Amino acid sequence: MKERTCPRCGQVFKLTPQRRGQPFANFCSPTCIQQHKLTLGQLHASRLESGFAERLRDAGLAFVEQFALGPYVIDIAFPQVRLLVEIDGEAYHTSVRAQERDDRKDAMAVAEGWRIVRLPQGMIEQHPEE
Ligand SMILES: [Zn+2]
Image 1 (cartoon, rainbow, N blue to C red):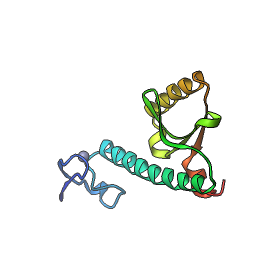
Image 2: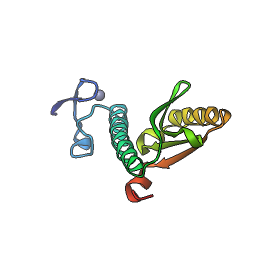
Image 3: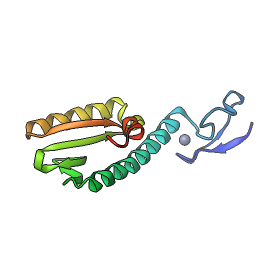
Image 4: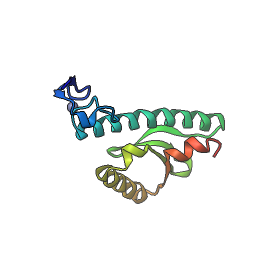
C-alpha cells in the first residue's frame, strides 16, 4: 500500500485500495477532508464578499466592510439604515456550530435595532446584479 502524507495534519497514512481515486484521497481522515472543505469555503466566501463590496461601492452606497458588532464581525453593514448583510459560504455556514453562532449574532443585531439579511453565496454567484 502506498504511503501518503496528509496535507492537513501532516500524518503519514496508508491509502486503502477502496479510497484510491476517490475525491480528497490525499487526506488521512474524514475529519481532515471536512476541515479542508471548510477552509476552501471560507476562502471562496471572502473572495465573494470583496467582489460584492466592490459592486456596492460602484453603486455609490455607504457601507462598512467587516463591521464589528460586539464580539462578532459582520460582512457588510449599512449604518445609515441599520442594515447588516452576511454572505453565507455554503460549506462554512452549514455546520451546526456555525448555525448556532449565526443565531446568537442575529439575536444581538436585532436587540440593537439592526436588521440582518443573509445572502446565500450561491445567489450572489448566480445573480451578481441583484
Ligand atoms: Zn490528516
